[in-house]
Image 1 (cartoon, rainbow, N blue to C red):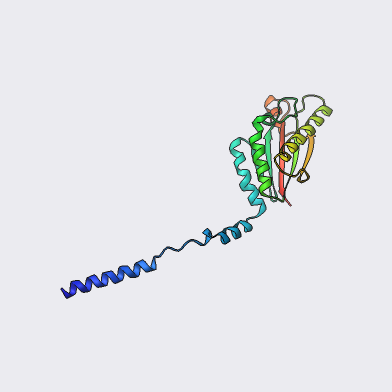
Image 2 (cartoon, one colour):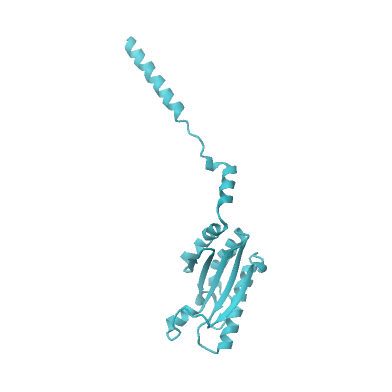
Length: 182
């Protein structure tokens, strides 16, 4: 009987010791102070990357360099043929870009319009400029200061595909946004 009581007492002492050693401690990351500190240590370029990640499922091409992100939007998504009016189909993507620029206050953007080689060179140049300005105006309309953006038209001067094919011309009609953090 004494040995049973002794075993029960020892078991109780052992369980008590184990329970006191395994008291869950709140993780350091969950405190407001450490959450704020970890957010401050994330580089602005990484913050921009996180914001822009939502664009890939929308069919936009994202390219990273050492100090910037290039977002390529197919022309057919953004504009109707011969038009510089932003199509509703592009609103979601442009809204996300505006959100990214708002979340990263030091972000700057260069918006570049490109065309294919169909039509007169002078017309293509002015159309590319008008399209870049329209995208800039759209993003500015979402609360991003226009002074943080630049619009540039390249017309048909910088093709990325062969203008001799319909597929190549469609690829060349695009708007590129180069987003950097200064």
